[in-house]
Length: 574
Image (tube, one colour):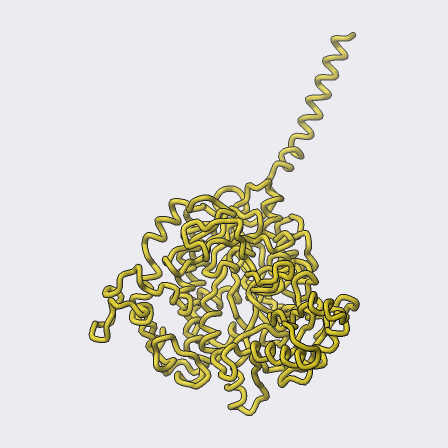
């Protein structure tokens, strides 16, 4: 009987195993995920740039993304100030500065009595570049990113790499747990990193840098891609509100990059022929490439080499490339929204995007990469341009506002440095001095707000105390609340009238800037393309903080730990 019992038991086990076999095998199928996620952020890209130059774009860049992808045409930022650091952080954390803590590109550290830069980190060292350029990390960012969450979800088997000319455009998207982040050092024309990620550059990065591509791009003048007469979407080439390159008499084409990048080197004299071969690379101003469309081309070159060398999306794991193009911002700041230079930069970026998408098809496979394209902020028209068309606009000088406020407080309360800083359209008051004078902080904040309302161009001034004790679901005060982080923000927040901006050359207005809650600063593109993305368009309201939770749904991973955004149902097919 025992033998018969054992035989029956064995047969039952074998039968159960056979029946469970198909189910067990089904469980072993890999989780459906894209092979590679590529986040593309275009610095200072207004939404209307998607269509303003439509007739000039090729078929492989913006038109391909829109023709094959899903376009959220009503996507906005939901906080101020709209700057590069907070923009990149908000896209990848899925929340606002009120949670992730990146309140600007710079802010005052009250405990130290001095300012800090958004990715500044003196505890790390440069890798491949100068100390000033390389002592950077994401340590100021207080929450995880979607890239961090991907690393966590795959037990760190996924690779995450950030690439951008700007340090903050690479470091913040890559997150805290990234394999690497690379940015550009204009002193040596190289992509560099820091010891936060690694102690030495990979061999492929060193080899790429040795090719001196930045110098090669600067060896030729910047001429228009098309005949200049065809740039009918832009204003004339020579207008007073555009900024010229240092060394130029006027901001007009062609821009002689070989001569301009030579700087003040004694190796170049006016009698010498144009050409960078006369200028030793060591004394050239290779940082100039940032302010040309070729900075984007250099970034694309490096991104493609990153995919190749790191085998991103080709290793059996879902990888993530956080790719940001920053030359659009430098060009926009210098020349403005309506310049031929800006249009030419976007036409060339369109070609660079086509290169990236084509390379993804060839290496990762068609339909195997998930791509999103967005922007960290938009841009305002030049006030002088708007006024030339009888449209209300103006500018304020940040230093003048700070000094005028300081003088008024001295007149009212006596000598002392009452205003420590004016940054991000916020006033930082000297709290120890206020206490020493036996004044209350709340009363001083109210007084400063009342003073600021009297300044030209200021439409609102809100105290930090009001922001902390109230809550708004919409409108101007919602933008301020979402951008406010108590330990890093100022005491009084300033709101300018529509069409007004801060001019650091005040009263001269050259180029443009951003930072407000105006639609020109908050309305940006959001296009998804590739893996499981059906072509379509939605005019439903979308927020920049909704990108990360949408990606989390696609990847079947946790959203970032501070996420306040929501998944976008239309593109997910829900």
